[in-house]
Image (cartoon, rainbow, N blue to C red):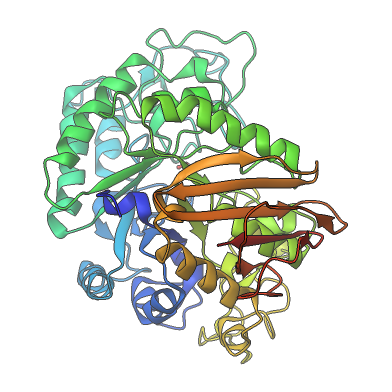
Length: 506
Ligand code: GLC
């Protein structure tokens, strides 16, 4: 196996702390709950976890509105709980990435409280303030979750900018004091021993200087941010992180829907270590559409030696099983796909249980952007409280919690949970699956076929997106290493891939 930093061979597992596991029976997950469930993650075989924000927050955006970058919100526990979680995870060989939210703070962050207190406060320029009149916003930009990016501040008669909620004012990264303060927040957690960061809305941290109107205003259009200054900042951040021992890493949320643009955020190997690439997440269950998105990655990232990432689900989007029509067969096949492409895969807690989106009654909706459906609590057991100590946590359970929970699925070797575990084990045992070259192979239209090769180690992967079985011949002798329907594992490949299923051949 060639030398590679750990994050290139890792499978990362995203945890949304509110929804993962509850140690206090208050209906909201917490850090100690995560620690108590590290067994599940170790058994599953993931290499790292990414924790969505657990910092002090008024929770207007459930933690993505940070009021203290260097402390834990009491609902999630304490810094001591974090240290224990980190130590226990490390003792099991599991790395820990935390979520860094540099684009905006909470409006309750002491920095913003000061900034908004008067026009001549020394922190006024830490945020983005503009003159105007209460009836005319400084530009036409709209905010991610509705409304404009501007909120009028009565007391000081100016507008402040927020790409997201009014409770999430954007920090002014053109002010060197802000840069220095935010660098300190990175150091705080690096000194504590975290293995890296998922970086929220990283492409947006510097807005275009003229804040000009946009001809067509789209929140994710790159013409409002994606500035050269973002890249300059990323180079400094990269140098800061690489200054620490132990291969710390970063994965940026670059919410620009073009793989070519995403590629730019790797710089010349001197910006992000990894960037999320969302076009595949938005691809439907269709071989040709997936092929196009994979080709884009190969074309745009490989020439830069930029290491790809793959993700199907997260806390912002409907779960992929639901997007793919609710079919468990597709969810299983998708797991094989996600975990055998070239790059670092990111799992979202609950996908290993084959969870579908929850149905949230109107009166239980809490997220301003309609994302509650994918944030339902993880059912651990078949009991009425599903291991949470309360029967009715902060959001309703996902569908079928009586059977679709970690306990029941772990007792069933044919379950999707065991399938994930088998695929992760297959990756661990195969340098080709972890680091090998990816090459497409000819196949019928509903099938995506590719090889992964490193030296003598070779795998062929066949994914059938169609609703009929397809004969696919491979002109070498192979053994079925993992099949998404479990059939024929360990036997010679019989020449057919079932509908909505996938196989890894050795
Ligand atoms: C990112 C997060 C999302 C959050 C937003 C604002 O897109 O993934 O959950 O609401 O940033 O911080």
